[in-house]
Image (cartoon, rainbow, N blue to C red; front, side):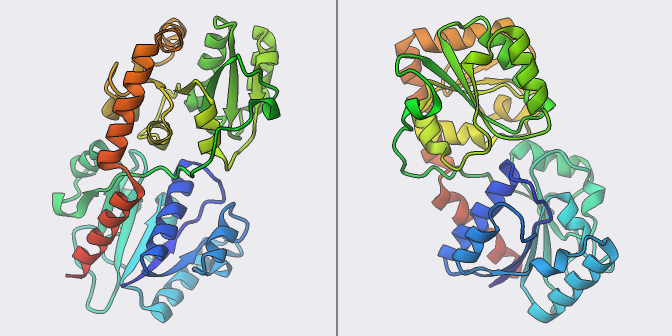
Length: 351
């Protein structure tokens, strides 16, 4: 089996992190791979060190007709069994002459697979033969948009939780006795971090760690100053030690207004950190309220504050949701389980 991956994004969000983790897992299983990725993508060197063949030159310069031509030429030269496109932009690089969803590829041509990390426009994936959704609801969305059931597939994500000890709080200017709220998130309006800052204002014994980067950083810093909580917020930037942060935090908070899934859910479960999330699509579908975490309405400062206070003050509840969350992770979302699902899916396409 030979797979050609195409990932056009230079960002390092949850989708990019997961795609890279899948490539690394497939490499460990001995799957032959070639990856089209920008050389300045954050995890390019990690793939290079894993001895995965990389083709960054295909995407440079950023001129779509030329990129399409180079990818077509690369497919003809590499002769992969599968072309895996990660997200909409990557799918747009597939030459238009490829067959459309529901059709089988021509003899000798690769199967083109598109990946949905959200409720994307199916029409943007017209060059793909099969689509994979990160949740069952996203897969159902594909079918509602006209994709045949047999060509819409569900494979979940998995968290990459390293065996790291809890981070030393003193390195982040955080007293040992403080209650730590952790948000692992892009600093983006849809992530609801402004609501979390308002909630922090009502939790004077808490310090907030914001691990992530994004366009909203200055606005969030200004808001924290205006709310009088800037001295209790640590803007950590993008971190590669998420497991260590989770194991040191008292609660992992996911206050998103829009979240198709949220691998952070799985990371919290795997690390044994209590989870409080707003009930956007992903958390609402995967978190059982009062069992594997606490759910609150979107944009409800009072409800979020109440939920956080409950978890902080109720040790029995805290232990219960940690145990149930970890059990959910072990059952369906380990790296080994999800990697097997990808391999089985690819093999099923090849007959």
